[in-house]
Picture (cartoon, rainbow, N blue to C red):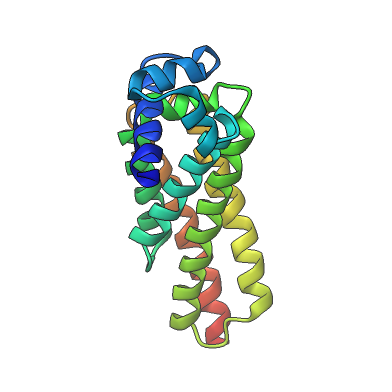
Amino acid sequence: MTNFTKRAIKDAFAEILGEKPLSKITVKDIVEKCGINRNSFYYHYQDIPALIEEIVTEEADKIIADYHTIDSIETGIKAAMDFTANNRREILHIYNSARRDIFETYLWKVCDYVVNAYADALSKEVSGFMSEDRAALVKFYRAVVFGLAMENLREGIKDGAEEDILRITRLQRELIEKAVFEKSDK
C-alpha cells in the first residue's frame, strides 16, 4: 500500500506540474488529484520539496541505470536530452521555481556520471592516460556539459538544442581526444 500511495502522489504531482508552475501547487491539489487525505501525504513526505527531491533523485538514478555504459559524451547527453524532451514542462516549472537548487544538484550528478563513464571508456582506449589528465578531463567536461544543460534550460529548452549541444561536444571531444592520443603516442 505504501508504494502504491507514493506512486499515486508522484503521478498526481507530475500531472499537476505539467499544468501549472510549482509555486502554484499545494499539498491540497496533490491529495485531491490522487484521492488521499493530507495525513497520507505527510506520512510519506515532509513537504513538496521533499517530494520533488525524491522524484528528481529517482529520475537521475534511472538515467544512470539506463545508460550504464557510455562510450561517448554524445551518448550521455542524448540520455539527458531525451529525458528533458519527455518532461519539458515539468522540468521548466522546477527550473523556474525557488527550488531550482534541488534540480541543479541532480543535474550535476547526472553530468558527473556521464563524464566519468566517458573518461573510463577513454582510459581503456588510450595507453598511458594519466590519472591527472583524466581528472582534468572530467573537471572540464563536467562543467561544459552542466553549463550547456543550464543554458538550454535558461533558453526554455528550445527546439534544435540537442543538435547544437551535440555539435559543440563533438567538436570539443575531437580536440581533446586528439591531444590525448598524441600525448600517448609520444
